[in-house]
Image: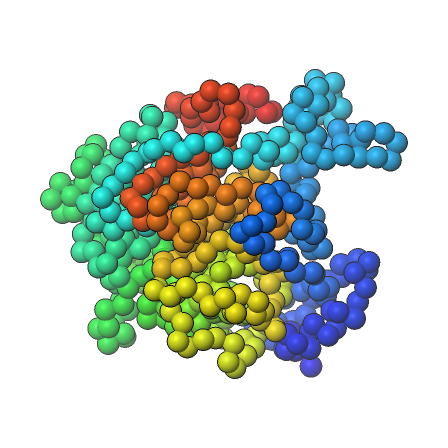
Length: 508
């Protein structure tokens, strides 16, 4: 039996026979007939202990014995000379004063902060002060996202309104979009990489595109502006009016990927103005999809069938199946966020847990565990059964699990913290209990909980450069949290200094 085709249970027997003191060893096995190889770890890492809502903030639970933990530390730890407090003795974290003194003394030999030094400083300033009100609408907020450069912020509401705020200009409304042909709500939005166009989706196969850069502030569909309709139906679906839960632009802006209620993944070619690929991906709703990295070759998907799947477009036409499957959630998956390296991602699940995955652990088939799901439980109106909280999937392939938040009533989202300011050392998520939870990726500890809202927080977004986080809730409020310094947090610098001139001056 090959390394790839062995079951998860058999693989674990092999992994557990190894000593944790052994170095990581990688096996490169041919990935069946797909024509390329994927590396796979042969060391089983300890899973995170559960982090309850009563967990003391910042308490170290344990260390994640995995490559991703070492990468996180390398990207957010200061120069080793700054950590020394004596011969052979080191201490973390290093104070900001010592970091600045070390920079002036040129301890690193570079005469400036490295990206890891910067992350070590900035990641200590968690956005927990506040909140300050950005907006309040008489409708549930479903989406809230910063643009890639942090200059714009998008919030979408159930009453068909989508507001784009100009962060650099004091959160002034740059565009107020009145969406067309809404079914239930705006389920998702995505801003093009050049920030010229926004697409929005609902429970319909038609996705609409709006010109963000036009001079019109009020964008009323096909009245003041054209909202171009993109039809994702492929003609072979029998006219079934499926809905779209998740949509994302590719890095080059030429394609869209979408997850739908007809158990499928769609890829839409914007240049050809038609769908280029439909994948019957899961046995239930595809709640979330995203590209794994900038190449656009790999796609991650998560579904109500509890599975995460990895799709390689380079070989799908030949094989007609996923590159691999990852099992571990006990209930449906609400959201997936990629680390951006084509290897790691996190998923939020209706089993009230976030899981961290390494795709090198994927297998060709899902391991079915009869009876591990409750057919009577529905997260839309029922609380999670207390007895289910202690159940663990016997074939869990994830490398870490984070608990404490609540995933009920809606498809609550989770994310890695920004690479620039934190080295992605945190994971954060909305919650049904009206809070925003921030977890340490390596220790699993809950390092912060932000409480203000009166209803579930479906989405939240951390500014890519500043210690600022914005949360949106079903109570209609959109609020921002900042670092707890004296006075106000520095305002985003005006153009043309869009790359955060103030922070770069102090931490470079």
